[in-house]
Length: 301
Image (cartoon, rainbow, N blue to C red; front, side, top):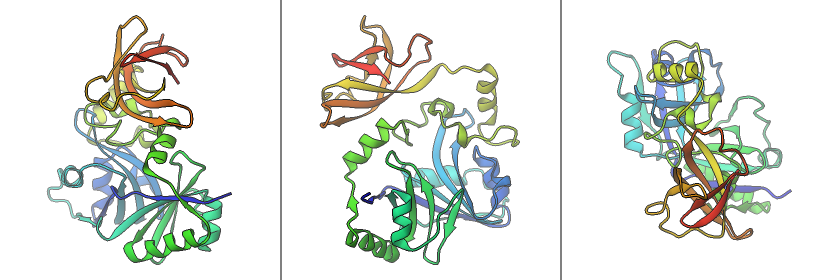
């Protein structure tokens, strides 16, 4: 099987360290950081007090007082500002290492590990001299994320290329991501929606104690129902280029408003568009339901 790879140039990398780093991150993020062994990795969101999403990270616990936070995308200055907002007398420091490290994804994992001559990170992450790597599914066969300094990442890319690996285009990445149902920040997960609408339940630890946004998370969980939910759509043909700006209303075949389109990608191999949309949490909206966007017919996946 051919190895595929692509870089994620929009990634922001933050080092959070200090005596109070673990406690502070536990009070700032949705996952129970206190219980993370070292080394290990988890996914966690950073919320406003209203439960809206300010950032989505993979959090790597390097030791008891040192963590790497990796965000695929988002405004770097805003992410850092939100991350440090509640530091008062805490003995914790946040450093932006985005210019020093690069993020690359490869798949499948087994072939990549064989090429690199290293062992598999079964449930956590592997720390190497110049990098760290962890398992990640980005819409392809399960692969690996590699976070390395600039010099080492070039060596890895050269090794992959010399062994017949193929670089994946940005368009192909988006097709696979959306078709496989993987929402991203800030494309579909953002400050206009509650984090639970994303469906990323694995990023939330219930019963961990107080953190920013916890009251809203717990309230929604107690009610057991959201007002909106994130869904995937398949639309026949290619949507107009301005649809996300002007024609983003999703309707029923009878033109009753159902919600709005958040992101869309066209797959020429099937002459179909695939999209994420935020729709009313209506029991009648089940997979196979017909919808309309900009006059084109689609289906709820």
